Length: 476
Image: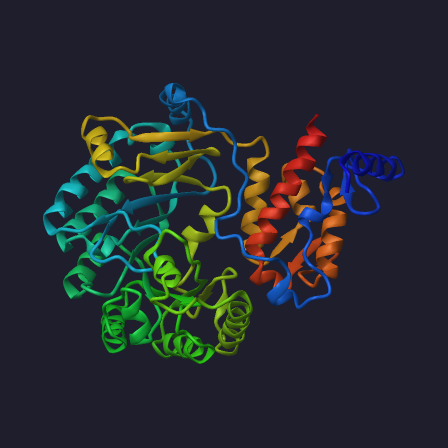
């Protein structure tokens, strides 16, 4: 359509449209200068497999603006003087991996035994840098997550002293969840016992698939039998939650193989499991291998959506409790606190190269280059590279993300807690999503259907983008 004709047509429609929460919507589903259709799902199709053309592959959120690099330290000084209030977590990043899995987009640095002690020495120094500041010292930390990379690659003695140091330098809550992420290859009794001696009470292990062929093709070295042996050993201590990550959508992974993966995890009688969809990034070895025809393609969206639905049904039939759309618990030991809190509005104290944190909504990112990070830490400087000021409605967007991560959103409660009015503005969007089969409404509570659960990341990002425009307009 000619641009001038399109503009005149939209002006005519807008002049007759009702006003909702300070925004003008057209009866055809448009806002002046911004068609509502960009937020809509496809109708008249199978919503589980075809609601959108593709899935968003990043954590949904609305960012603020990065402040100039020469202002970072000054702003941090102000933030560090204020005690934390509300929920808080901490993230400790370990960048090393003994091998690189084909699908991984986070691989950073190979591992050598002699680097273990040097790295932990530097991490301990970073933990000390802010320990006398109110933002680190005051207010309980409810969950600590050792991620990577592969934290279990560290030597046993270094794992233990790092875990113990966290208890010294961070004010952990009495019921603090302390998670060590890792892989079962080279994670034997000595390292298991070191983690437990250091206070770890949760292990998140990247099994990804129990199928030996898929595992080894993707770079996971332990066989199915070895995985089960190590899981049994870790469970035998009876001192911590043991969960595994499973991924659906791998090349060569049929529906039968996927359901066998879930059945295998259930048979191990673990405390819980996480079920994630495979994302194939072009820069990873897997993306390159598929492009070059060395591996068959990963599952397409219709097959992945069917795998998602089959996994939900299998775990419900096995009487697992759903903690979020991707996290399932079998026993009361599994709480999944870190993942639930970090996706909401919790503060996050972050340590290690490339680790990202959040103080009162201000997002910060440590330098990712290992050598630069280490040099700055040993020189007594927190190696923050980027600091992003929060959007004025940061906590609204985080509340939306956290709620939809669990499959529902109470709109009346959102308005009450944040002093806003959003239901009238959201009405055209929610009405269309309901027609498309993605949501159901029960009064003021929005609940995702099975199809909506599969497309949750898209819905969360679209709703946050939509709300930002609505709230910015209302603020004018």
